[in-house]
Image (cartoon, rainbow, N blue to C red):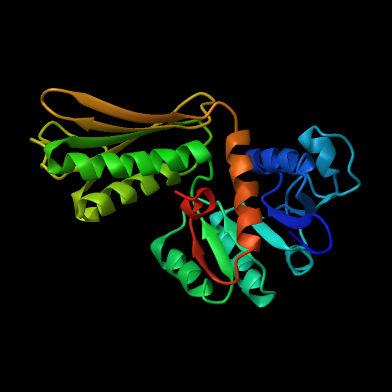
Length: 271
């Protein structure tokens, strides 16, 4: 932890659903504290007390747009803002040599490459899902795929609330990548939903991803393995965003202790 006491965390995207959950977790943490809460320029939260908005009472700290000041003065950054803003956050993290946790989804491959390049200067942990349970889902799906090989058909389903902007979810995409790696397959083996009357018989190596967006579902993910004789399902269903927030704070406390490099939640959990 910081030699000055609790670890000072700057939180990007602090007024969103995940930001509020992380704020609540930090308010109860024995190791870390919220140093600065960053919101977008036109947010109605700017200038308002972060504790009041998060339901934890007045804190005397308010939402701000001064990203550079917030990053320069903190110990570690947690970014759950927008994909468009993450480039600015990454550049400032490198400029001020600050450890960075990125939970933003919808990042394209060219930007993921920039993250990998930046990790030779600062420690970065980038994960679409920081829940302990979801990362166990990744590991269990990987193990299952290695054992079953090409003898089972694989499908992935993600279900989220009606407000979610990206589809498939970042978690579903990570699950897909885990399975491709375990089986030695490539993106050309992936189908994103199925359309039309003449789809035809599935290829033996196909992995299909399907998404549902409805209601207020926080996040359900399932990997299915089908043979002619049985079906194996490995699922994770989130009941509260707190599970992701706790993982994000664990990630921040872990990444602060690293010098440089690219890290995963597997590193945090030791799996």
